Image (tube, rainbow, N blue to C red):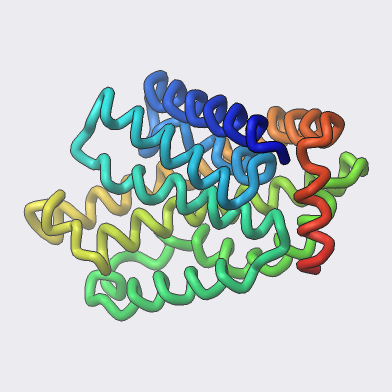
Length: 235
């Protein structure tokens, strides 16, 4: 991919990320999360990470909130993760999950909080390798296989966003800054988990309806040609 094209795509996706943040309403997280899987597949792990970071940073500088540090770290990290899976690089993702989940369960709060609140994260852990194996279809012409691959990568992507936020909140101790007591943390954690399951479904639906046509368009334009070669080598 030419450097001029990289710069243009980075700017476009960063701007989209910021706009989605500004128009967000409703659930736990901002609408930028719905763009993350497409950012990852089209831009790749490095450029996608940069676009998400810039978009997230600009949005929160323009309109800061009390939980800014969670999104600023989780959003680009989840794009990086999905970008790695889209290039069939599953080992770094598995290591990251192992570290963050181990830290969570070793923490007293991680063992006390309900297990059902992170079931989507545990399911994503099981999907890491299959998603990487399916990633070659993201760069092919078979719409059915492309859709399945994008849905798998998208689910791991949104679950990674949740996992990073949980990791920052519990093992990293940011709960002490945000919540006055364990009871307040418990109530917010349970409510946030319920919303996150709804967001999981929305992300998958958006990837199915919007993501597939965008990825196919990018493929026809030759943007994914170089990335396809990288995926084949990884497999």
